[in-house]
Length: 85
Image (cartoon, rainbow, N blue to C red; front, side, top):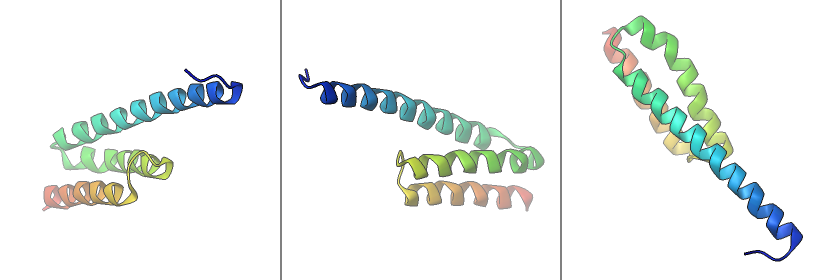
């Protein structure tokens, strides 16, 4: 266990950030799963921007890599085009 006051504070902050990152990551994964389950193309198109926004926020905060975010968004956009065709 940390002995210095600042180190104890850093440990508390890291735990808070970890919990927040885990929550946001899991929420985004669930949103992606739910989006993939949608078969109606209009509903898919309506929900896609909000899920892409969630992915962008994870990348901005460093929870996921920016290239992973780009790959996820690209795959979701391809599904939208395939559903429209």
